[in-house]
Amino acid sequence: MSQKCPRRKFLKTTAALSAGVWLVGGSRRGARAELPNDKLNIAVIGPGGRGSANLNGVASQNIVAICDVDDRRAGKAYQRFPKAKKYRDFRKMLDKMESGIDAVVISTPDHTHFHPAYLAMQSGKHVYLEKPLAHSVWETRELTKLAAEKKVATQLGVQRHALPGLRRAVELVQSGAIGTVKECYSWINSTRGMPPVPTATPPVPAHLDWDLWLGPADDRPYSPEYVPYKWRFWWDFGTGETGNWGCHILDIPFWALGLKYPTKVDVEGADNPNPERTPKSMTTRFEFPANDKRPPVVLHWIQGVPPILDELGLGKKEKGMNNLFIGTEGMLLCGFGSHRLLPEKKYEDFKEPAPFLPKPPNFYKEWIDACRGGAPASCNFDYSGPMSETVLLANAAFRAKGGFTWDHASLRPVGNPAAEPYLRSTFRKGWEI
Image (cartoon, rainbow, N blue to C red):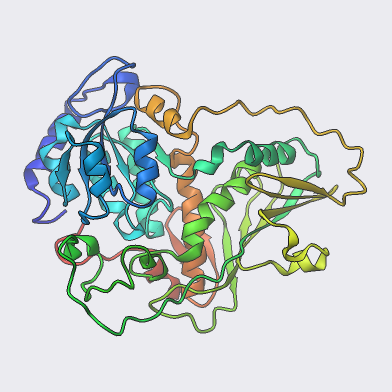
């Protein structure tokens, strides 16, 4: 990767992999071969903020290392797990502790998802990764391919996948309650974006390693306008509300309709996108090809409120709703915890089908079980990779001021070459792949 990522690590990794060492359940687990009921040795990268919930989710295992560029953000985790080795640089952690780590939990800002996940999987570590899967379509595809190649257990942090209300919506669509679905509207009712441009450059706090926080991103002066949260709305670091919420919300149609790669993406109202900051609103449209269970599907992704809600007399009153499926026999309005079949009069006497999706285990437990050789976790990268790519395609079309036909095999935006730079990643010197 760079002079900062010692060559001996890759030599050791290559040697181990070429030896064909297979451990529990056909998954590679570093140098430790253990029984399926043994606890995993887990390293946690980014234990503050959202990372604290992920740490809680795997706390039943052996937390052997904690890595964070911010000592203050990581302080509670350090106190809770005093025996865990402490690092600021995940590259040094993965190098020095290679044989002592089975799995890695990554909860860093979007622009630093790719590098730790890539390094971890290269050396056979299982990975739990926060959404969106990566910062660009290219990064996402590379991680998806690598996970399949190394046969490691993966899970994307879209934990709402296990909610009973979300699963009920999937069951209603798949059972044919509203007929054949040909269109779906998905949205996040938010105007977050376009944060203030920093006007001052105060000193970097002593508890923060700013250079490591930047990681592969271009160098710039520190500002509290980026850290610890507003990075999400700067293109160099985050993916906006689309990246923040898209994987959660699009999980419902992706699962219900068996979606994978779109063939076309269009965008409205992207005449003057800001080159540095994410927008307060966005309207995009995807076309998905038919599969063996359904015809082609049009999926709308909107940051804001879809006009069709007002057209149907629903408006903003539907609190908690974020998807509207339109079928040949009716409509399903739903969210993570509730749903309505429309028109209501038609469905007054409708008897909903009995639940048929298997009851899920704890979202973290199913990943831990997969690491031990069990069934793949429900949001493994085979499933969540294409979903994450779709979210990032919306951003690329917006930034490129127009849609394109999507050649997913070659990652080419046919008809709009201006989108190319927004699909692939460039890394500053010392972070090249």
